[in-house]
Image (cartoon, rainbow, N blue to C red):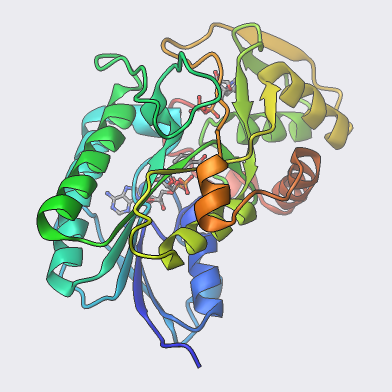
Length: 324
Ligand code: NAD
Ligand code: UDP
């Protein structure tokens, strides 16, 4: 029988964190979900509350907390442009102070610590697809910088803790991920398009829709998290996790309209500043080091996500920002 680990998931009530908590609870670990519900709601984890190996603590990671743990996953951060631009100074504080506090916990407990970094560290990339060796093209004073530079600074902190304190770190760079439990008003492209298609509203395409993204289904991604955490200690990352299938935003809109069978029309809106023109992960390293690759095709993942959106009452989700 494998050892039961005490694992904290910061941001554990979010879209990705709640699924990660489910997987860890299933594996019979002792799971502590730490969340202040800044961009999520308790309903994402209420089904876990009765489990003897699950605990929920309402806490903001910008403040220190003392816990005794073996592993730490740091997912606590507003993740969609609308959410992270709502209070950009708080976003940067969360990335930096949250990382400092959780790295301190890792150092004190000699725990392994995982950072949910992002493809945004590559900015609007001049290299395509993006390998981990690409250093990125980020505008440090643009409206996305609070997130991009916050996540870049967090990566720096992780690697300095690793070099100076021998902290056992795992850093993954996540590319656009979608699936059930996305916040319906997070403003991300998949949640917006599905909500609009189901309501028969216009589909809001920013720009001409020729910009590309590569969409990974939630379950594939979280499997990558678990493999990275379980990998040998020399596998620190950064390692890209994402689905290399690349689509234009217009193609995504047309596919969602077709699956939903919606009468929605495309409505072209101004492109926000610094919106990356293309994005596709090079996942050779994840294939080699983690034996990981995504398996869920975009159409299949969208079908599951759309079915979930049909089951929720969007009126019960508070739009957390005015930017949706
Ligand atoms: P999410 O907003 O659903 O989850 C983030 C969670 O962190 C939420 O539950 C939120 O309430 C919590 N949180 C925010 N600030 C906090 C604070 N100060 N203290 C405690 N909890 C706090 O978003 P998600 O998509 O699940 O993202 C999870 C992580 O993965 C984030 O760090 C994000 O940057 C990263 N990521 C996600 C994607 C993606 O496509 N989903 C892509 C790249 C990186
Ligand atoms: N987008 C769009 N319509 C929307 C929301 C987003 O056309 O209603 C575009 C956005 O401009 C970007 C892409 O979809 O080019 C992905 O946006 P998202 O906010 O999901 O994530 P990003 O990868 O930009 O962080």
